[in-house]
Length: 456
Image (spheres, rainbow, N blue to C red):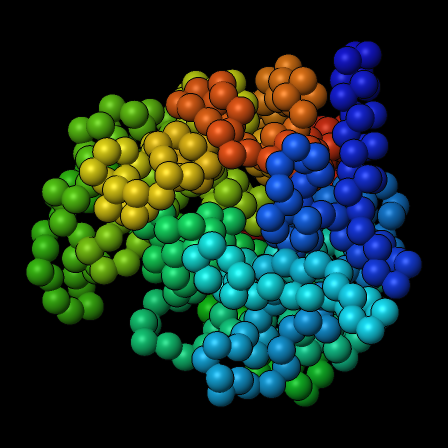
């Protein structure tokens, strides 16, 4: 390892340790950012999704106590009873974030279930990440004793019940509103966004490892098994886009009825930019579409959902290689000057105004709308190493190392090539730092992949 890489890692570790927060004198998580130059807003809180990358690094380094305490204390924030008040969090929901408050001289955890968020939307992904992290903790400690505790088993069941609840749609995916994931602002994701479906699939697999065969779990275990096959079939077949699939969709008939209908979602070809997409999508590449629903096929490439599909084995071996082929062959678009684009392409002009509500933070090629997020470096690394394509990870890490330290670890980058530090990006963003460290650890010792990957 070069002296420069060592220096970058050293500063990253120092900053990560400074981000740790304590509750009752025990480490419980990491705050979102340590930027001294910008008002903290909600960046002084610990977000469940943000902490996952830090937690995985801590587990690799043998610091399991902070992860255990985090899992225990966040579980206590989960509502365990049915709420008749629509303004209160639903039973089983995990908070988006928490901070340490003080009352009468005592510490307490103040949870945010989305009621203080920009769009006032509860997070669908927080509970999913919580289960994925619990599995990683179990694998790291080589013990199922902690996860087998009654309170943790109940927590898993309640999260799953929330995802498997009876609802108006009859698809195997999870129905969620815009703003319910890492993309926490309106971006045209209402329905069945890929990011949530990939996480949901991983959670179903993880739950079968974590749930003990006690009476209370039997119904939910069977429900999980019943959901897995329809979910994987739906995502692998109906979300998949490659040159062959594009030709099929291009010739779709509409207004079809009955079980034999090929165009089950009544997708109109005119709603898809075929000529642009056919030019951009290489013959050897493919990916999972961003969303699917009634008359909707979102053809944007969403990195988290596609990379998680590889990591979890939601995508089969051929599809996984085709996704990585796409990233390699469209490197300048998806990686550019900083790994990597959260989604591609960005919504622009009238489409941006209509779909995002003219959100200035999500203007074209910024933030969620085509911005570049260094935290995704660890997911790209995990996916590449899993498929024995480590050269992609090495290349991406080398690109990130050229700038992250000098730019003070920004939250995200702007511009079609990711050359600009995000206009409103916080610096010393914890998951940017942890994502880099985690990527380096996975490169150095691929055996750590077992914490987050799943067999087919």
